[in-house]
Length: 344
Image 1 (tube, rainbow, N blue to C red):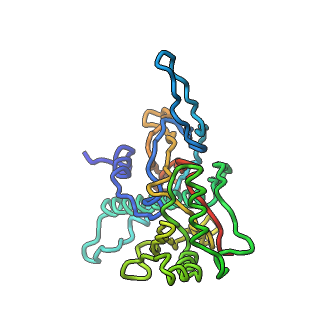
Image 2 (cartoon, rainbow, N blue to C red):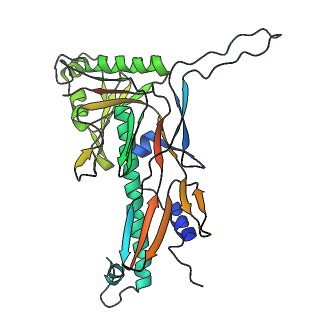
Image 3 (spheres, helix red, strand yellow):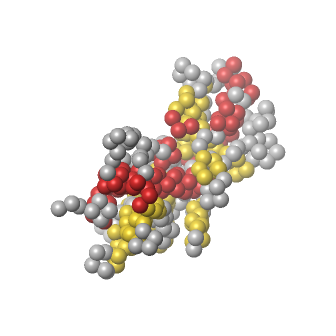
């Protein structure tokens, strides 16, 4: 008996087994969190100081420690639903790699189309996650706007500023002192040590070539450790600019963009902006469940990061393939990073 490759169980296995593309921001700064049982999830974030365990006499009962600094809220992440339409003409056209004398059958072409379309649709979801992560990281807000959707999560992020007057373009601005000061600001609020600067190539270059830094290097009060090259070019538009010993910070830049709903190219990192970030992954993705109609005609929730669906229509004759997901990025500590616009 031949299995229907578009049936939900088979499609679901294909999606679960599909290798995830490499995305620098997701791979480096975000972890995978919880997948919930319903489309509404509970978001828990930390903000504030760390309480001490109380001293209590051994004959006295324990003292309640309030969950100071933690907030919890219910939130329904917006649904993403990228879709592809497969018509009879798609199954007639030879695919890349087919020969003229030994073409694939329509069934084989259908299987190849399934793989290609699945890969491309999953990539659109991954890019949406990267966009969501970068927006949250650099603005402290997560907006979800689309057809019939307009909602925003404000994370109450206050570690941000825009330099006015003197900024990194000023040859007298002490960039090392500034980065060290902001690093200590975050440490005092969250207890997290900032180890990285994530920024644009222009800002990264402005830091390592700044006259105040070069003067410190000349006076042997600072070093810029960059290995054998002045910059190390890495995949996906990533550049390692070096390590500032005095500030104990690595400088990274990321040059990449996405195409928005209006067809315009948008940079993941805003121009002239940097983020001071700790080691590890300070953000995580949670997922709401997907409500679908099961084979028995009953509605049911699917607890998964991505849920595939496929159906056909007689007129026009077509097969539809779509992926559904409810991802939302959550900062683990809202006081745990710093953002500044340093070039205007």
